[in-house]
Structures are given as C-alpha cells and as structure tokens.
Image (tube, rainbow, N blue to C red; front, side, top):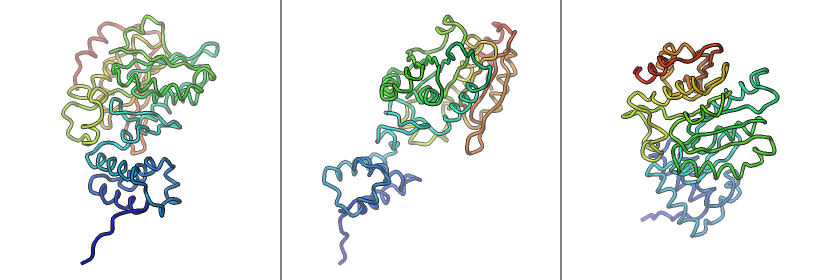
Length: 317
C-alpha cells in the first residue's frame, strides 16, 4: 500500500499550502508564497533559492497556523501585518481597512490637481483635509510625491488612528525633510475644521457599501471593520456628508476628490444636481473600467445656502 510522504522541504510545504488554499482562494499560489516568505523572513523571489532546504519545525508550525487562518477567510494582509500601497509598505491590522489599488486613483487625481499651475499659492503650503484616514495611506502617498503639504486627517476609529500613527514614524523622511506635515485628529466629522480657514483639497476613501449588500466578499464582510465599509441603506451617507462639508471647507476653486463604489456614479451625479455651488468635473475610472474616483470643483463667487445642506440631508436615491 502506497503511503503519502509528509512534506519536508520549502517546495513541499509550498505545494501543501497551495492544495489547502485552492478551494477557498482565487490566489492560492500567491497567498501561499507570501505566507511562506513571511515565515522564512525572506523575499518572495528568494523562495526558489531555498526550495530544496528543509523547513524548520518552528516555521512549519507557524506556516500551518497561517494557512489555517487563511482557509477561514482571514485576508493575507492581516496575517502579514502589512500591505503595499503606492510605493509604500504600510502596517495594517483587523482594526483598519486594507488599502486597495482602487484607492490609488484618489492619489493620482489629487496629485494631478496639486501639480496644476496656479492651483495653489506658491508662497504657502497647500492645505489638504482628509476624511477617514485608516492606515494613512492617502496622505503618506501624497507626501511621497509632493512637497509643501499641510494635511489634517480626521478619523473616528481609535484603532485606525493607532495604526496611522505607527505608519507615520517609519515614513518620517516624507514629512519634515520635504516640508510636509500630517496631523491626525480623532473625530466623527469635519465641521470642526471650518473654523481653521479655507482648504484647497478634500480627499477621502469613505465608507460606501450599502447595508445588507450581499455581494460583499466574505473575507471583507467578516474581517474588515464595519465602520470603514458601510454607509447607510444606499451606501451614500458619507458621500452626502463630504458634499455638505465641501461647501463649508473648500475655498473657491478647491476640489473634492473621493472614492465611490462601482455602480454609484449615476446616483452621485443626481446628488450633485441639487447643489449649485459644486460642479461635477469627472469620474475617473479604475483599471476594470468602473467609475471610481469623483472629482468636484467648488465654484467661485457662490455662497452656500442652508437649502443646499438640507437637500443633502434628505435626498435619497
């Protein structure tokens, strides 16, 4: 009778991990390689060099535990404790949303505005406010590409603020040496910043998933923080808030740039028809062709009215 030989080498354990994950992950090979490189404390590309070597028992136990957690749906980023975003490697944990490639579209659009001649005052730093920083992915990415930025970011989650603070420290070369600053503020809205003068940019990757959305991947629904995902019955509550706060915070010709859910483009356009002080500019598409990043201009020469704010509070689509 033929008996199976227990895995011994790095290659054996890699194949074992792929077989375990192939029924629950569309990226079983990549997941396994990332987790194996993590326990080996090496780069993924170096696994080939070590594939014939035996995997030490402590690493075997750690690897089996991680594969078990992955089969239960836990995102790889939480298992590794890090996630790559833009050109950065950021700390993440279950208390913070995992940064995604779609959100790099917010960074792209914001950088395009920052680099526009005449957008800011060349004699003063650009003033940017962010709603919901999570891991501080957006402000750090902006600081990696631009100089002379003053960014204030407001976050409701204390857990997320702790992770954001952890991410600022290893990236401090992006801050003072480049005349950039990022201030983390705990809060549930942006109203407090209206007293701090006018802002050039409002950026955000807000919650935009509708409550009860049954298309959300189980790994997202079960493991990522609800506070960073869900935004009311139609998923537009935070978009309404950002539009309202744009009226209060942005200077004339200032911009709101925020991520929206795939398929929310038309609903957002309807919202904007009710707000004459804001002009729809563009919905940037992601790599899958979905309208993903909203860009709105605060019109010059128009003072917002209470009617516009009340419309935002009540409008349902």
